[in-house]
Length: 247
Image (tube, rainbow, N blue to C red; front, side):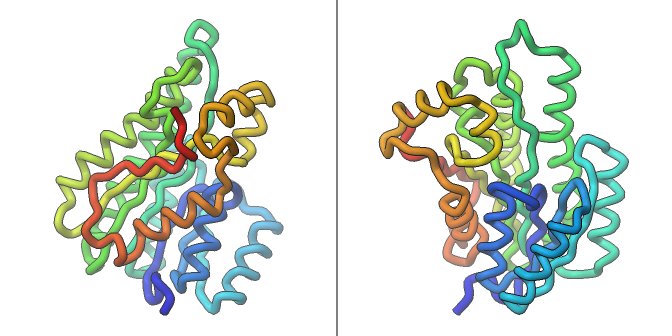
């Protein structure tokens, strides 16, 4: 039996990388998807049409920019106008940033927190009432090991993800017992972000990981599936590292 049959998931940032992998995995398990992305493209529209047909599910694309608070509010309103029960929210969308603090503009800090924290907060606020109506409501926040370990260059990005981790722990108590709230903290995963870090940084992280390789997006999606499913019915307030054993 499919683990998410009959459920509907809202997933942000699902046009590529980890978000797209989660969309595909949830679709395979029978979930309808409200796919939230920044930009509408023919390629994405074709792709989600193919995924929907292949898995006999519905995918509803919603487009808004997390950097724009008004656009986020409009996106939430559009989701509500679908009048579809929501069981799962995956806050995946995010903006990467890697720089030493002396070379970081304060506007960059504002931008990162707007996308990686404030907009996620707005989405949770906007959809919490719908999730509360589900018998198995769950929120999955995609954080990062950068929000736990405090490595060089992560004063801003890491702080935004640390904020999401604390939010996860707080909301798991505030929303209990109606909604389970957990976070995933991926290590360096084979995505565009990893490519932009440069070969030297990638090699360093591979060397420090027990499994001596980068993760792949499907491995992150598999853990997200567990947290979204009834298999994790007694799991809340947790931050699960999916990092290959980083030291």
